[in-house]
Image (cartoon, rainbow, N blue to C red):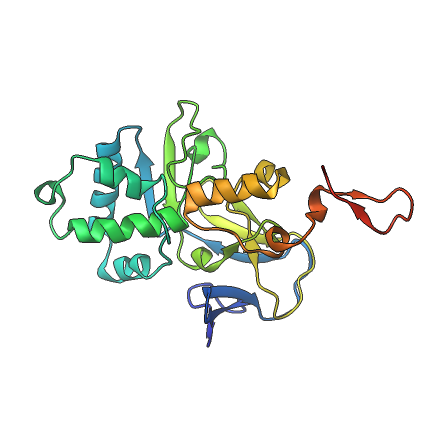
Length: 248
């Protein structure tokens, strides 16, 4: 099933496609030039994060309670983390929060589902006044003592991760997130970006898989991860200039 990307505006260059095994994905509906803007979107949910577990959980609960009924439905309809991550779900499981301490209309059952949604789809980083947020998993422990913000986006959450992405992320001063193509993209090609920092893309497959499993709760099956040789980390053969020599 193919859906037009409602909310992205007229002339949206991608469709949201339902797949049998990978859920909803974003697919280019026309050829795209390098550097083309694919989408600009404001967050569904914006969070101020703390290093204290209970404060993180209560911040999420209070911000979720303030959302409209429609926006709550959008948020809860996003992809769920398939395994427990070290993010909000782990924080919720280790917190002292009980049903009676949550805002009116928010239950622990709500919070468990919200936790899985945020752990799968969230971004976290320094507020824009300190520079654009890096692409980290929600609550990843690399803060250097800075204040942090977390954000979740609706349509952007339909874009899968790839260790060989064709789209890059750009944050502006209002926490809007835009996606732009890294190179030419063909009609019908899936659009994907890296959930990890770009420096992590330079690491070996085992490191990338470990990072994704810990931060987002899934194992990557992109073409780079499933290839017999990771040609991104290989060298062009000095003899034939065609083949590649894998790292040892």
